[in-house]
Image (cartoon, rainbow, N blue to C red):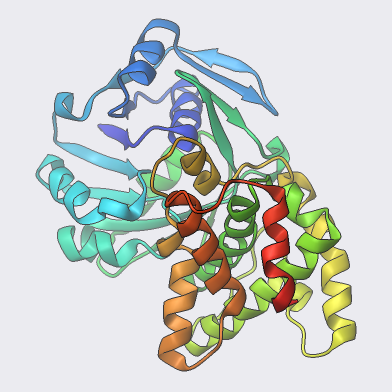
Length: 337
């Protein structure tokens, strides 16, 4: 059995470290020369809510040599077609690409390799790459989980192998309703990653401030309305039904939902949005594959999405140098709440 983590950055370094620590040989693949050099020299150092270091096998993409039974795809979605096309010849006959990306990435993978080679996984924890070879786990250890579903054509053997590998780190829940799970995660990312990136803050900067809560609850309602129009049945995540907790139809229910936000997000309050990490590095971020999914689907169904539209606008303006990262950007939502 041969496996690799393609795009071993903040999340992938942690997954690779846990897999290696618990007895599975896995290749950590990344373009970043400093990161690969540090991993080779010092191993993967995982800090934050845990602290350990483990030697790992770190390589560059051009050093990959198939056939791989499993490739965990952990890059941004911005160039999925080219990335998956590069990986396709490296797959074993029954090999699978497991997408652990944000948004709804499965179609962009199986349009290249086929549904029989595609597995979707939702990641329920966060991380920040703090230095070359070092990644910070920002979620509490007892809150870590994966939610995995199967696309058409995936065999029980393929599914069982991927599940076994992911369980080297944390529990894996089978999701028959993968689309619903993706939309639930999209709701979280659009709200706390999107707003967090727009204001240059952590999940806690959104969930634990009154202004942040007022914007967040409206962002979540937009996501639910659009998801339902798309035919999605939102799945529970970690025992929580987010639509029951946060969807509102009157001011009283809205205020109750706002009050519940910091409680629900407590174990993830230190999570730094990956979009914010990209903005800090001057790199393009995934806002169009996260909030943009809600905006575009809303237009298709005639559902207004003003908060998600504003998040998208703010982040594009930050990328274009028209705005700076500032918690004061929360004021840019005042006319919407």
